[in-house]
Each structure stands twice: as C-alpha cells, then as structure tokens.
Length: 232
View 1 (cartoon, one colour):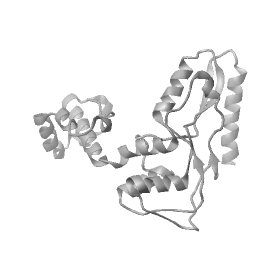
View 2 (spheres, rainbow, N blue to C red; view 1 turned 30 degrees about the vertical axis):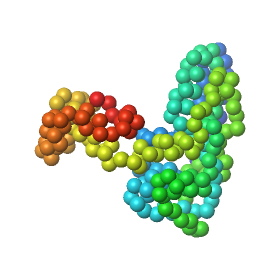
View 3 (spheres, rainbow, N blue to C red; view 1 turned 120 degrees about the vertical axis):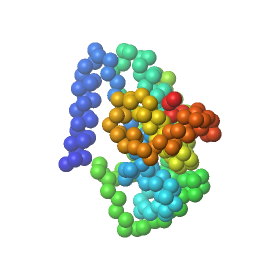
View 4 (spheres, one colour; view 1 turned 180 degrees about the vertical axis):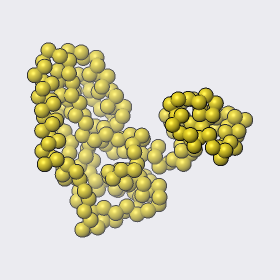
C-alpha cells in the first residue's frame, strides 16, 4: 500500500545512513511545519482555515479531534544551524515545538484571534493520504543534546505566521506584483521573463505611480514585520 511503501522508504533511507557511520549524515524528521509562505491552495487543515477566514466563509469540519506539533521557521533554522555546527554526527533528530496543539484548540484560537466561524458535520469525510493519525508528534528530545531548545509553541507558530496570510494579505499581493512588474519592465530580469503578462499596458499606471513616489515610500506605510519578505 501507499502507507507501507512510504514508511518503508523512510526506514530504509535512515537505516542506510546509520550504516555509513563514518560520514556526517543527519536526518531531520519534520512532523509538521508552518510558515507564512505556505501554499494556501491545498487541502490541509490550516490553509483551509485561512481560506475560510479570507473569504469570510464558515469552515466546516468533522468532530474527529487530533494533536499536531507545528515547528516555527525560526526554530527549524536554529536546529539546522546546530546540526551544521556539529560536523561529526551520524544521527536522526525529531523536530518539536515547546508544545503540540489539538484541532479543537486550533479552531477555538483562530476563532478568538481571527474571527473564524466554524461548525461540525458528523458524516464529513476528510481524505488523508497516509491515514489518520490522532497523535502525530514526537516525544523524543534527543536534539537537546546539541543545544536545541525551541522558542515557540505550536499555537504561537500558527498565530504568528498566519497573521501574514490574513491581515493585509491584499496589500502583500499588490506590493509583490508591482515589484515584479517594475523589475521586469526596467531590468528584464531573466528570473521572471516567463511572466510576459507583466509587460501588459494595464500595468503602466501602477508602475508610473511607483516610479513617481518610489516603492520604498509605499513600503513605509506598512509595519516592517509585514514586509520582511519583500526584497528591494
């Protein structure tokens, strides 16, 4: 089956790595990761919740509760850096936050912070390619041995990163589009030459507007924390 093949592939890969004990190989097992750069057009729980909030629609789910552990990008970065600083290891580390979170708690907290409306439907079937896992998180704290101690809980990770996808998301979109247009029309950057629509006349007015007052002036209208991914 798909589940067995997937599990066996991971086991086989890690077993081979451990046999090569003279080499510096570190396997990082990521149970759940969430960041502001996630693709919202997927059928995972958090993207579906965020889409419902942005569209002002009710989120419908079943009553099946479960627990997940979402690692924050900064904590994952911290763990990777610690692995790099330990060049003589051949080991597997599990990722973990300061505490996991249940689906019911996610719904309640997103309702409190982002006005999510939700309801339960008993007979709603949710497809899960690798099967249902009630508790999908690690109790291993082996990474503590190399100095890894996470800063964020699962809840803090979800709330901190989700605000970039919910609050002022439309302005993010505009700024990024204007910036890409400006690069394309001024520099013909090959990185985005696959986007010929950017040279369309419809973009002339916003580009002239940006050229007159400067995109940096536009960016000053937004808090720095909302713009750390817009590179000028």
